[in-house]
Image (cartoon, rainbow, N blue to C red; front, side, top):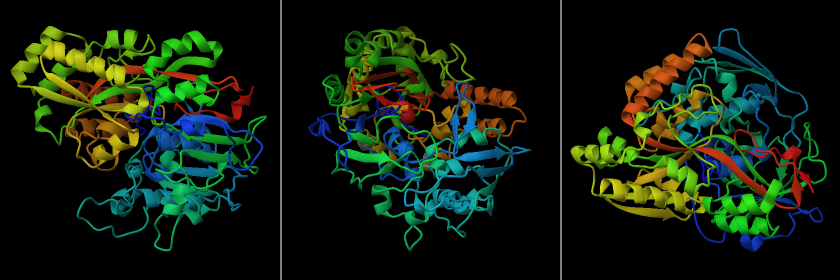
Length: 546
């Protein structure tokens, strides 16, 4: 999953994307300056602090994913019609949607010079799936035959080191056998979790080392200039990898990610040309950006959804679905989208974004603003008198969260306390630890362009263990419909099953869809041709110095 930090869906998460993060001056002290290595002034991009070390199998949020996307080449990218196209893969083929043969494209080497092999993928995927390694993205390998042997469940012992569904055929070919047919398996393979890892990633004990998480060796466009120490360093410095076989930037070779704890501070730095790319503008900056930046401001479609999440498993006050529906109906999405976000959001009315096949206009009946019905339902259901609403302060969420709080106060007669977390990583850590019991802001940025990606990673029962199901939602009928969608003989039939699963979410309302994102980004006067793809990641080869 990709949980988002920003008020736009990717860093922003990304929820998504799950949208949550912090305040303060982050990396602003680092304004200007060169990346390690000297005279080539870097292109500088804003990010929030990654939640964990830079390990692809343990990264499920947008900040770390953005950094890793610069270091690694995925097996597939996506074209304008949202279909997967081979990137690091030469071919990905199946005759039955169960057995998939993946042939690697020649020319890719690790940043230490070693050739990339099929074994590197198999090793990384087995490591991710092994529950003893507690990798955040482990759940994404759950469709591979033998996954349950590596992830038998809490209190059970892992009896093997490999999934039987992974087979190395030769140095550049491996075969993946799924436990059941899944027509969208190829589409999944552009996600961060499916990156390979080199032999150098693993220590003598078979675990990925902490050192690798600070100084990852990739096979993508950029390589690390020096290790990044989370909590200490405020920049992540990279250089173009000379042996990268794909397209390289035309007139620059250095990239610097600058870590901010305030989206507003980052925007100020961009206005002063001390930052070059900001892809998650705060709501407070959008009107100014439109007026002052001209063509350097971009407002484009985005596939993300902004949510309010419920801690269903950890707070009994929200276990009544009518309480959850009432809160949803008390939120004036239209006014928030038009006023707080200056018209750069759309009121959410489904659990699937309009950019992706499967969206149904008006499907979420409990998403319609109806304050009178909301209050009546809330009182009948015995909703709590006080509500805490958590959000990450570094993602530009204060304004819309306060607007939601005001809606709930006025329409439900409850006391609402917004709770800012300084960093996106902080609220994710508390949610991972199952210790935050208030409502929480969440944003979802898609991992791959499919309706299923809005459902399985966030709401499936198993995703409460290693996925992004932070609320602990569980519904067997929902899970069974996802399985039927996965195994459907055609994509069209699968989509029908996924929509039936959405109907269950609408009945249960485990999260509140509040708005559909648009990507609001900006660039300095020093760069041009900045393109941001559907996964909310910069296409670095297209960026030029102005």
